[in-house]
Image (cartoon, rainbow, N blue to C red; front, side):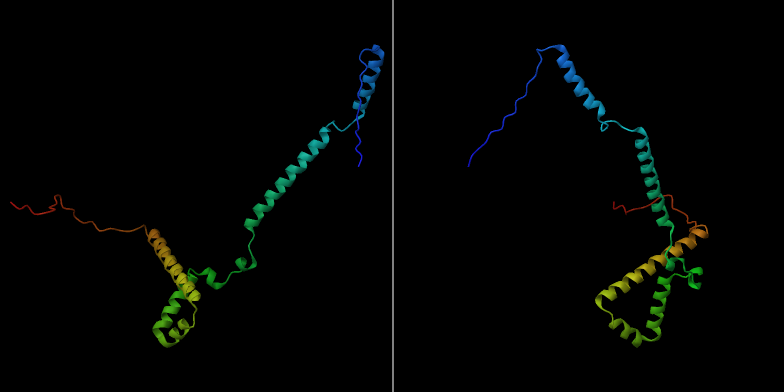
Length: 164
């Protein structure tokens, strides 16, 4: 295997006549001036900035519209929607009424549930209780809040007996 060495030789003619060095510089300057790569077209930059702004405005508008849209199911109203009855409370009261009226059927239904379904049913009952409490709170607030009875407060307290 043979190895070859490549050598580059650069020379500079600085000691010669000034005209020769100026001519070399002019050739170099001409090459530089002919290149348009470094020039920035301000119109293109402004156009690109405007496009970027319009794109960001458009994306923002689309995001805002997503929140306002309803699914067909959400937009569909029924007679139940117009009433003040809560579906969780209605479901719980129906099951409790079934338990008292027909205990055998209620037991058959509850025994058929899996452990996961039973846990979900307990969660539904808890939601019903929370919504019942929230409805009661709203009702009390609409009436002006709680009313307390005036009770006389003793002016002195005896916390223990003196043993003398």
